[in-house]
Length: 461
Image 1 (cartoon, rainbow, N blue to C red):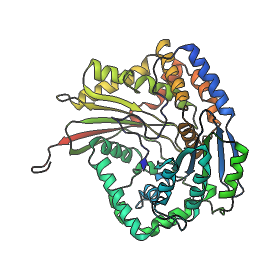
Image 2: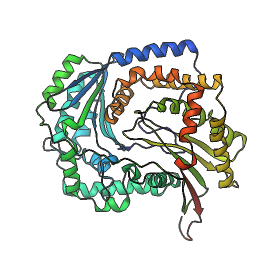
Image 3: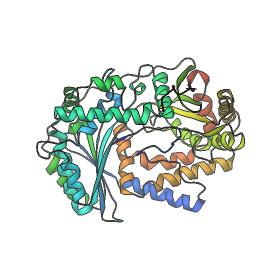
């Protein structure tokens, strides 16, 4: 299973299609991609069943393949203090059997029919997917409709899986200095909002979660009116909607889950923390509160991210890693497709012999430069081309098309967002980028985290 989270040092977002992976594309190709995107948006069809289940379909007949994805509007954002990690642990339990299909039967049946499957949890959603030859689509509908309502959550299996998740936390976070620094950044940057807590949960909370916690959470959030089924690939929409009605239509509508209404208060002063742990080298990370898709500033921030912090041709990497040789790696990240506003971050992983002060000064220099000087026409056009090309190329696979639609549906932007995205990116000006940088990249809106290495304890490897 996957957790979805951006991690400095590995800038690709796990199971998140990147908008910035391609460099320097000719203008004529950009125009072609723009026209293709407009058509893409127009082909998406949406329907709502009486029980509240939303159906979103996109036919793609390039190859006889289909992906079926069920997205639930529940993630770590919906958890309460003391119960963190519940969304991710429940994701694991969804593969542990129902009254109809026993443990391992879900995965075995898909594998025997030539498909593959998995799931992932984020701050805002939990999603389950399978990819099949298109003539096997009914298998996925049968399995997903069954576990939407008939999950068992055997107490013994729950305890075993809880230990699996705790070990996952140890390996991916507690034994990884960079990942644990990111975790500390979010804990410091968010005072009230649940983005404060890690998707995988705090270790003490995991140790205290019970089978009843998971079962009650399942009954509360895994209901058709809190879900969307996204199907992309080689099928006929009218036929597939009838089949979805057959499998899911009889599942009763549930009571609407409690709405998460916590709003993070405006930050009124820089926050700074020092995180001491066993590590080889210091790291530094900045986090700025920035808007999501509900604010049009996010288009300028997308372009700004490409220019300043995305990839090895970005200003930060080029100047701090290549030219000044202060860091082994450096960059940043920003995603606007979130239910609530999140962070735009910058980081540097220092070279041996370099100081945190040098790295912080170098990061500040790049941030201040983009606030004071307009980006060149060439740099602006290059960034836009990267974004537009990657936006389209990430949709080459039916899986990633469905992924993008699912993220937009569950975070509130809606699939129609796709129709205007390229248009809005094309409108971004150098003035827009400078204004966004001046508005959000201010000291009072910043959280700074510094990883301070400590020596490995004697006798510990």
